Amino acid sequence: MSEYEKNIERLYQEPVFAKGGGVCRSPWDIDWQDEPFSPRDETLISPIKLPGIMKDIWEKGEPTKTSAVYIHVPFCRLSCTYCAFYKKQADEAAQHAYANLLVKEIQSLKNRPYLTRSKISSIFFGGGTPGILSAADISSIMEAIHEVLPLTKDAEITMESSLSDMTEEKMDAAISCGVNRFSFGVQSFDTKIRNAVGRPLPREEVLKKLSAFAKKDALMILDLIYGLPGETEETMRSDIRDAKACGMAGLDLYQLHILPNSPLGKQFKRWGKSLEIAVLQSLFRTAEDELGRSGAANISCTHWKWHPAERSLYNTLSSSGGDILPLGMACGGEIGGVGLMKPMADAMYSAAVRMGKFLPMGARQSSRYRAFYKAIEGAGDRGVIEPARLAKETALPADLLLTPLLDLWKSWGLVTEAGGVYRYTSSGRYWYRVMIRRMMHAADYMLFGKPDTKKKAHWGGMMNMR
Ligand code: SF4
Image (cartoon, helix red, strand yellow):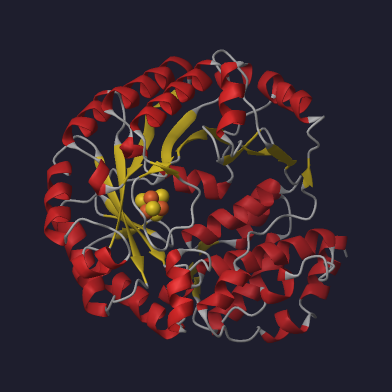
C-alpha cells in the first residue's frame, strides 16, 4: 500500500469525514469555512531571493499551455455598501497618470523570453471600475498590449465596468482597439434594491444602457448577486428575464458575502441580522430555475450563457491553473510556479515602473502538487468531476481519494453520478465553494498526512459543510 493510500484510509477514519460533518448555522460560518486554502508545501519567498527568482522566470520560465493577464484599475466613484475591495477615489488626473504607468509597465516587458514563449488567451481588466478610464487611456493601454503581449488570435479581452461609468464613446474606442467583452456589475435591476446598496441608476436607465450596449460588436455580461436586502424570488426571476431581454450574452450569479468591515456588514450588525441559509438557497434555486426556463446554458457553478460565443475564459483559466500575469498595483497572479502580489502603495508601484522594473511586493513558491490541486479546483468549479480521469491526468490516486467523498455527497443530493462522472445538482452548485475547499483539504491530507489543526485552525471548520 502506498503512502497516499495509507493517508486516504486514515482520512476516512477521521470522524468528520466518516460521518459527513454537521450543518452550517449561518452564512457567517460559510465565510469562515471559505477561507482561502493554501497547500502545505507553499513557502514564502524572501525579498532577498525574489529578484533572482524573477530573473530566472523571465529568462527560463516555462509558461502554461495558455495563460492570461490581469490588469488592475483601482479607481471607483461608487460606494457599494457590500464592497470591501481596496479602491481609490475617482480622480481624472490620477487615473490618467495610472494609465501611463500601466503602459510603461507593459512596455518594460517587451521581448522577455517567458512572454515570447507564452500564448495569452485572455486579458481581464478588473477593479475598481476599469470603465472609469478615458477613451484615450483605454486606447493607449490596448496599443501597448498589442505591441508587447503575444495574444492568441481568438483571445478574450474583457473590461469590467459599472454601468454609470461606461459610455458609448468609450465602448466604441475600446472595441476598436480589441476589447471584445464587457462585464457590468448590475447586481440587481430593481431600483430600490440597487439604490439601497449604493448603485445609483434606476431600472429603466439600466435596461436602456444595456440594450444599447448589446447592439455593439462585443459580448455583454453582467453580474447579479443573490441575497441583497429586499430581494425576493420574484425580483430574482424578474432580474433574469431583464438580463435576457436586453441582449446579454451571459451572466455571473454570486452569493452575497457580508464582510464584517463593509458598510453593509456594519448595518447588519446594527440590525442584529444575518443572512438565512434557507432564504439564500431558495433565491439561488429560483434563479437557476429561471435561467433554465430562459434557455441559458450552465458553464460553471456561477456562470451561464445565452450567446454561443460566450466562453468565460479568464475565470476558467484562473480556476484550472493557467499562469496569470498581474499588471498594475494591488493585485495578484501566478507565473512560472510563483505566486505574486503587486505593491499596494502608489509610491512603490510608480517608482518601480519608472525604473523599468516589474516589482512584486511579496511572493510564494507554489506547491509542487499545484497541477493536482488545480485539476480538482477546476473540476469543482465546473461542477463536473470524473475521478478516474483526474487520476489519469495527474498520475495521483484522485479516484481513491475523491470517490468515497463524492458518493457521500450523492447520498446527500449534492451530486448525481453516471458512468463514473459526478455532476453537481442545484444544491451542489449552491455549496460549490465549500465542496471545493473540502476536496482540497482531502487532497492535502492524502499528500502530506494529517495536518496540525492548531496551526491550520480552519481545517476543522471545513468539515461543517452541510
Ligand atoms: S463598483 Fe466595485 S469597486 Fe466600486 S464600490 Fe462597487 S463593488 Fe466596490
